[in-house]
Length: 575
Image (cartoon, rainbow, N blue to C red; front, side, top):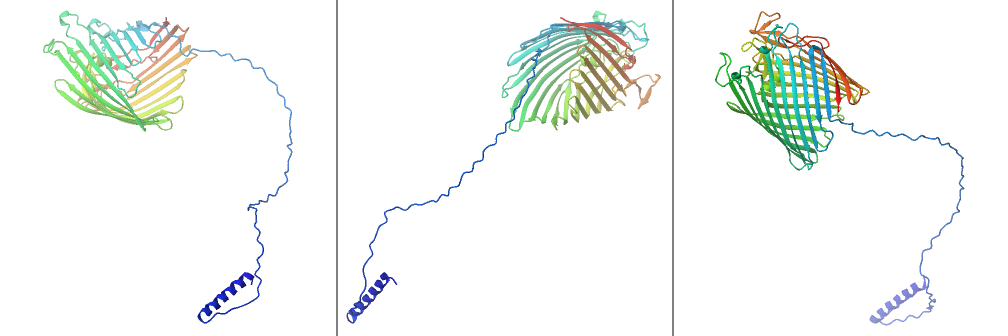
């Protein structure tokens, strides 16, 4: 036990005794002890941390430099010659074409207009084609076609405007009977028309602004004037006027691009034959047919950002004003989607509409029609679907099908009331048409182009056993081949089968009968044409065309065979 402990123990004992002495008496204890204290020394150094570092020897590895001497030779390169070709080829203001051929055929064409301009585009174009030969054993079949038109357009930054004025003159003969000595004047016909169109088009760059187009069309069409001046009105005369407008507004979102479009059209047609409520003969009565159609077609197009998905929906409200006023709403919808970067594009759509019938359009379909025809507007509903796309960079295709209902569909039948059967009248029927179509195109730059189109049609007429003169199978093949931009070869082939025509004479050879109606098959149309053009210089070329090379005298209409083999050659000039 150390000294401090003994001291404390002794002190405690003494106080204990003193405490007892206070109660019972004092007690004194005397003992010997060493009470000395050791001297105290203060440490003057501050505490600090002492870190021990063990040093290691540094080992150096010297770099071994291996250098291999190399050598090379420079070959001389000849400087390249860069020939700059202009991006745009030279244009000439004028173009002329002249030619002649078998059966006393003549061809002439002239064009003169502006060259490249940012603001102005104008031109004049005239063309003439005629044939003065005759088809063996048939009545005179000469014809001529002449057309002249002038057009112009002014292009501004925010709008453009322009117009076109044209004149057409077509002469022909109703040669649909066997009599080579028939009088030409008694079977002649001549159609003339004056056509005008003008437009004003806005094209503002800002997508948030409304763009519009306003157009005006006018046409005066008439057939041949009678030889007797007092009978001047006893012919077909038609005046057509149309106001066409288009309004379009573009919109966009994070997912879709869209535009709103609305077409508002007012179409007026006035067709007159003879004098109303008067008769030239017991069967020939004059009449007036006036018709106004008001069309409103609102359509909305939707496009995805990557343009793979496209969809449109809308409709057509058509108000048909005749003796009675009728309003009809037709649907419009279509959807398509691009797969594998346009390799396949499936599509489907539903569309309906009202088509205004005109005498000028009927004469363009069948130039051998009578003048006193009835005009009815055609209503149409169609459902179509298919797939199109590309098989390679040079080849594309389209395969599809459609089903349509056509009310007041035009059918041509021989007119045995107002003529001897060499003219055609118009009848109307409701026809359901089912069509399967396919096309294949091949193009190797501008050197080779080949197209093939095929249609298979099935008709179901409500009031007739067949759809007269309409083909069941249609095949079109065409192509051209460009050899060094010097020699251009063109070829086309047309095939039509399954056509039938209504007849009224049961004694004719090949006549068939169904449900009390007599008809005949029209045979096969097989027409092949070949043409070639040799460009002697950039301004002069020569050409040769061989038409109907198989010399098939097929009948385009009943009793109307076409010309056999035809040949035409000529030259073209640029100035």
